[in-house]
Length: 402
Image 1 (cartoon, one colour):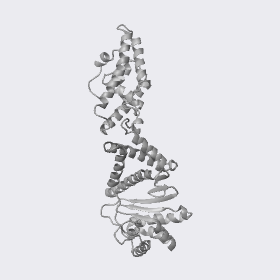
Image 2 (cartoon, rainbow, N blue to C red; image 1 turned 135 degrees about the horizontal axis):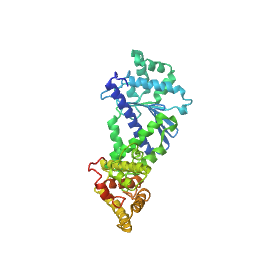
Image 3 (cartoon, rainbow, N blue to C red; image 1 turned 60 degrees about the horizontal axis):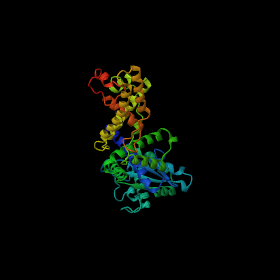
Image 4 (spheres, one colour; image 1 turned 180 degrees about the vertical axis):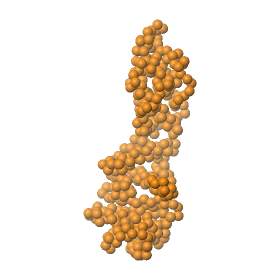
């Protein structure tokens, strides 16, 4: 974006894109109540394209400032008409032709063309003939050069096509704005998981939807969001918020050690004491980062019960103590260093491959256990080498690099 651009215009455009995403997600949530035979696509046939059973609807979305009016010469109205007038002749049969919707936060003044194109059953009286007359008059009276292409597209339709087009258009004015749409989505989230978890649930659903839409825009082969796909995602996310479960977030699962240098941290020094290889150390750092990030997010989202982490860590420590005490007892006081390392590696191998203690019955992601052990090792509450406390206390500074 050029630095010479109008920041207010850029801000409005950004809100428009976010509004589009919000409405598309709202469509998906609301469509669940109708069944699974539907799909939602963004920037396909229109801002939003909805297919349900054998029917297609194309949606133009306009997020406008409070007080904006959708007059007969409004740019939003005529640019939408231009898109639809251009598309209408390309549909081969009457059966294939879609319904067109203009969803706008602007309001249609009483007696305007948009007013007469509201859906049947609303406060206004739908009158397509009156709307057609008003649009013709507006086109003849307007000198707005920005609408030239829209007027030309309309002029290419014969009278029958003009009437057919208006019969397919519904104007949904004074629509909920982005904040109100978010509030509606939050209401659906409350019904799914309850008030206390609604925000965290919606954030995770939002994150998935953004990634899915990004894939759709980058590669048309990704296809639209289908009813079956969305139900599976929605159900999976909802199940993660059951009392016996906790959500595992995709962005955290994807964390890797990368170039993160943890050489001076206690849990890495502990692995150095028993001569664990570099590959396993990088995986230990990865598990540490994932567990730290996921536990922090659970805490920030208020998803943990009071004392739950403490209870979980106590269990991990007690499971470790049993194995560690047996090792120390069997080695005795005069064990050689090689024997100490060998037995310590056996305990650490148990952490890597055998220790699986879910924090809740439904939350059995391995990195939670493995990474929590690394966190405990970093605090010297658990260790692998029989003499880990004595050897590390003189090497480590009290500063916490986490």
